[in-house]
Image 1 (spheres, chains in turn purple, orange):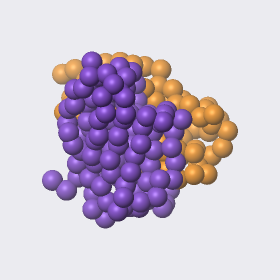
Image 2 (tube, chains in turn yellow, blue; image 1 turned 90 degrees about the vertical axis):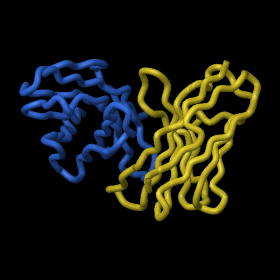
Image 3 (cartoon, helix red, strand yellow; image 1 turned 30 degrees about the vertical axis):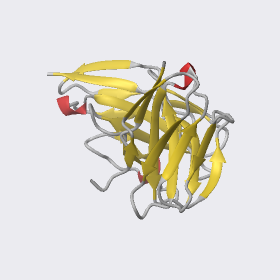
Image 4 (cartoon, chains in turn red, yellow; image 1 turned 30 degrees about the horizontal axis):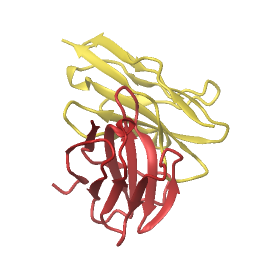
Length: 115
Length: 110
């Protein structure tokens, strides 16, 4: 499968623990996005990278959230001191950006449950 | 601020009937509008974008700036169209983030 890959698919953690998710984009894609989706809602933007540069962060991304894309390939999203409100599906998407015809390719997501 | 509204959470039609999924937006600039679809047990994927003025799987959507709408239409629904549909907006001045509506679950009955 040459699509966007996310790991793990599911994560259950206790409140206060740290979690890290990984996203591997389609290999030639220079843009990588993180979105969060809760039940009954559409995806909400968290942050995105162009190559290794983090170009935009949502206000949703509190100090407990950090994302990296160290070599412009895979990305990690870390949540520190998880809270029950962090329970959601975390989606990664990638694209070959730089045009208004940009098309996002989404991964299957990581479902986080904070107990 | 920008906002995307999909007023119908659920929509059901019979096979062969016309279907229209509503999307309204608020944005003071020139937006780019998209429809994304998620079939059961599949990933979210792009269905169509207004800038391309395309028809995909029989679906079309016209950007109406006067009514700030981007409704998705298909004249004859098929069972395989059953899915969750999300309308999304991107601010024309910036590439990058999309603003999604909450989605409409379409069910097409046989």
